[in-house]
Length: 366
Image (cartoon, rainbow, N blue to C red; front, side, top):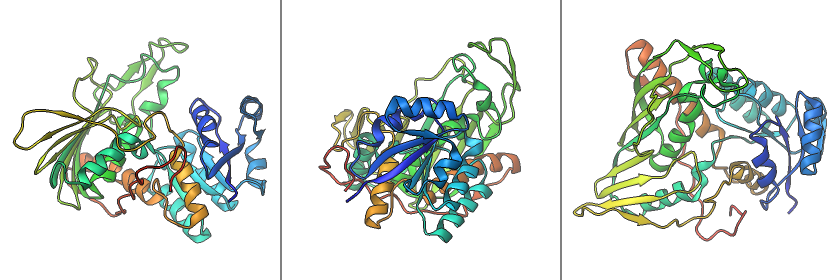
């Protein structure tokens, strides 16, 4: 079966791993790239042995089946809509969109066109989270009753060359890192029915201390410390803390899941692998659990490849638009709940993504 031919739009730093991994998968081949800066696209294309051209040229190219959208978040929805209008299946980096309205428009257009749409993060398809899913399904911790998720740091202005975005609309710790944590939780525990939270801007102004913008001031537009609570349809209750305001950092685990039969420490959902610890009820000892699945190294792009395989076979893809929208709605829900002083009732739901099979050969999905 011929591979699904994909073109990358947006040739910034994140594109490198998509170029490196993309064509290794059995269902996907990256054949072209485009950027608003056509010279940069051509240079990147030459570097990776693919065609480099303008966005308009790519969208008009009948050889391109699928677009991988790696533009900045504010452009995600607009580029997705253009790609879908051009008849291309579309996979986008996180977040799925900046607003719920934009995201709904993308989903509706994809449905009308009969096209696939998907979104990062795809780290939940890595060996770490997939092993945790299998442990839960096999009853290692009994019935899940709760979970905690922590992403706590001091912000990006001390190291990122252009940190302004992280403090503007579409940024903040919830929209920057929340997708990894919430997607992992939904993959393990299923969809959410209700969220609530408290959020604040601790420092209304940030000073950049990295180069090349050392000394510039950034006005903070979005909450930078968010504490949330999630009710899952399964009955489990989760908590999440995301912050750019902890100047001393944190030593808390990334995610823990608590069950009637034990507790599981889940690896950092920003990565594909990592250590898993389980303490069974009635013991006081933590056991390290070996990974049952592959894709434990940097397998970014596996979600796009899974979507390509789904296009070939007609099945549902795992990093799909419904999952991405559900996570986006929850992130907004934490902010809404804080502003309104009330619980936010989720309007969307989604299926828990189908786990990957055991024993997959490298760079295969079925």
